[in-house]
Length: 428
Image 1 (spheres, helix red, strand yellow):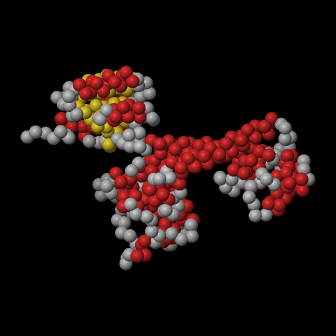
Image 2 (tube, rainbow, N blue to C red):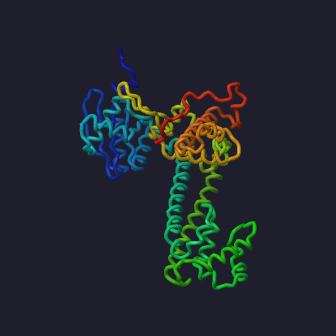
Image 3 (tube, rainbow, N blue to C red):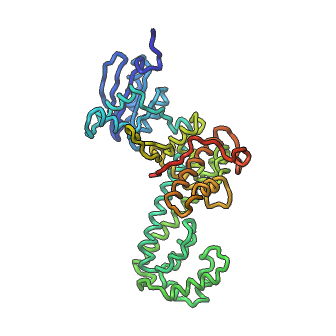
């Protein structure tokens, strides 16, 4: 009986261990023979590699383990040529290598053997290239925003933990929002108490009026700031000292990063203006433009998941239980999925819970009803809310429907059946 063309026995299996300069390739032909060689990350080597594979006159199944972003150019080139690509999990490859060789020893030829073994046993995932699937632009917007936000937080921490404690400790109480760009501008203008007390109170209020942002009672606020500066315990440094110049340099960097983040938000909103999934996700309480962008950038098309449990597993919000023999351990989150998706849904859940009324807040309050002061129970409630938000996001995109507030109230039981809901005993 002829073997199916989809089985690995009729295919050429190609295992690639990705590296920065050159890639180790191990090819196994349908008759079992193997060939090893290297493919440098150069266009000429790519062309020769494709010509060799096409010359085999047999369907090829190519597997590789993602290494940074070094795999992207080769994967795109092979995908454009029509080859079937499989992605090997780094964690699965490490565990398989230890099982096969009974050692933690790692080298490129051995990794290629491990990848080939995982291809033969089917332990791989279908690779979706962002460039081919039109998700590359979304990913670049999302990842650039993430990197700019990280840089902004690092600079902000240096201001709050170094410069202000030294030169103006009392000013930290006026910083109450990470989106208060006016604070950087205000501190750049008045970085030390000496820059404030050189004026009289009335002169300072007039000089700082346009810099202080929007306040309900700006006169009282500026007067309070002036009084605080006169009683500051900060180190006495002059406004034209080198220390203050460095402080202003960091403040300018923080302000530039805030402006850069705002520009990326505006650019993303313009780019996604005609994307229905983007607007549909924002109808969910707690999900804003950046969270919606992150979800679409990290998952691509949510419709490719046939069931919401697969999407939860992709996010790392599925449950895992250790059960050796008769012992059954506690169920907890696997955390083996996409960490950025998990973070996005967690932050969206915390935002939704702070709102006045929605189903996520109701679920949180129901979860902690037995012991509202238990911090561990609150963490579990946030986790259950994040899993629910992921299921809702999946359902809206999959069915093409809009979000309906308190949909559970229209059901006789009062809640949506969710046998796969995360009700973990432990979340870490």
